[in-house]
Image 1 (tube, rainbow, N blue to C red):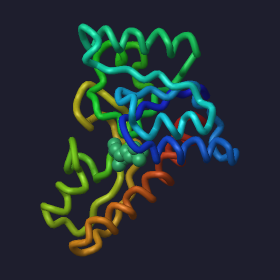
Image 2 (cartoon, helix red, strand yellow):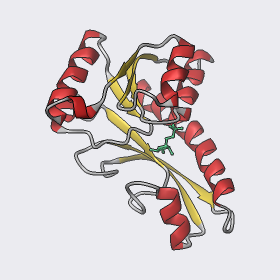
Image 3 (cartoon, rainbow, N blue to C red):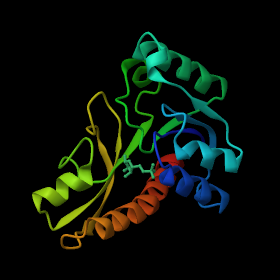
Image 4 (cartoon, rainbow, N blue to C red):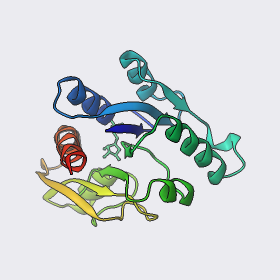
Length: 186
Ligand code: GRF
């Protein structure tokens, strides 16, 4: 299965997916990493794996349609079948959604529909929840909406954001790989 991974930051989920592919656990190939943050660490990670990167700056385009149309054409050239969002901090627009209808997945660090949007872990901790988690879902036009594919729960380590965060990220790496495997084997 040919995939593209979209990320705006650290890229630890990208790394986990690529490592699972290299271990033979996930039958897929990352054809392209797409980032809207040319200086983000995910670019270094992609370079280390020898995976091509499309880095763009949204401001240099007239519109979302314009930068998304360029991405669609790159993905078509590479015959990409699935888009995997991994910390991509932009709402996906109509151009990408209609070109990859029901073929875009996202991971979010909360038990959706609780705590969508930015800093979901901070939102959950501030709310004082005792259990939070991770959700993998199909992407639609909303922010962290779309049909849920899988979830995993994590107990909040009382008042300890860092430890809670570590647990969530470790769970993300396992759940994303597992869910993609199920999706691609269908
Ligand atoms: C993850 O927590 C993911 O759930 C959220 O953004 C973060 C990305 O982390 N959407 P990384 O860049 O994969 O390390």
